[in-house]
Image (cartoon, rainbow, N blue to C red; front, side):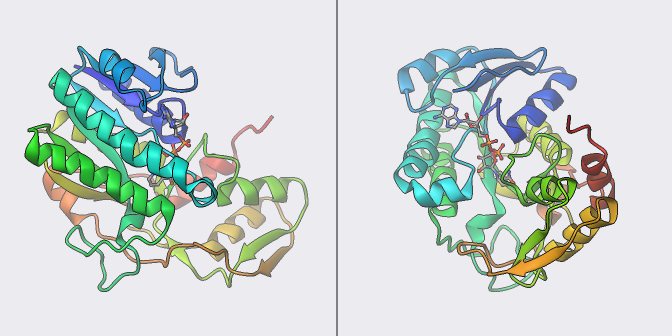
Length: 292
Ligand SMILES: NC(=O)c1ccc[n+]([C@@H]2O[C@H](COP(=O)([O-])OP(=O)(O)OC[C@H]3O[C@@H](n4cnc5c(N)ncnc54)[C@H](O)[C@@H]3O)[C@@H](O)[C@H]2O)c1
């Protein structure tokens, strides 16, 4: 099977491309930047250009749409860019998939739910996003699911938990804490550190994309989260146990999403997926990585 992975030069795109190759897919990476993952055919392109996207998608069985403005802070400062890339971009993916007769697997986010009205949050929970990032990610998801219904494009949306693993953006809380601790500088926790996240390892996320690409399930969102809830304070403790440094507390960060406990029961039923990488194991890998 031939897969075209958008955002293949980014953090999650790299892990997904690698997992798809390992599973036997022929993988074309489609990104504005060169995809240097060995074995992936790199196409440099912008999915806002529908014509060149449609040409690139031709001949592929599945489009794994990961490319986006995935940086929450960039989306807040450049909402017009987030709207174009995350909404118009996803709409273009639907149209290119229709022309190629391809299936789409979309990288959505658990942040589409907004504040929890019940927990665990399952896929029937209302979506009340309130930030340019999660609003545009939900709009992209809905445009794709509309194409599933109205244009017969098979679409599945994966609502990913906060991802971590090797290759994360340098402005992720993991990379900031580790870099500060390695430099012997204090780590600042924004807020009281009790806020938790179901940090989900990029390799687990990549397995979910492979399963979704091979499945015939369609027309639905699926949560892809690890069951472990880890607080920012616990994360800081794991970092400072390895690289001792002072921990200080600052003001909560505006725009941070209220923590909620998200259920991954549905994806286990539909795709047989559940997280396998424990937080302890994932952190050990990050803390022992060679950082040059
Ligand atoms: N990282 C997380 O914790 C997380 C959690 C939930 C959902 N997601 C979603 O997963 C996806 C990937 O996240 P990431 O952390 O790997 O982000 P990233 O910023 O590392 O990667 C995004 C990639 O998309 C590419 N891209 C952006 N606009 C493009 C365009 N117009 N045409 C072609 N390529 C374009 C970028 O060049 C980049 O390589 C995003 O859709 C994000 O919303 C991420």
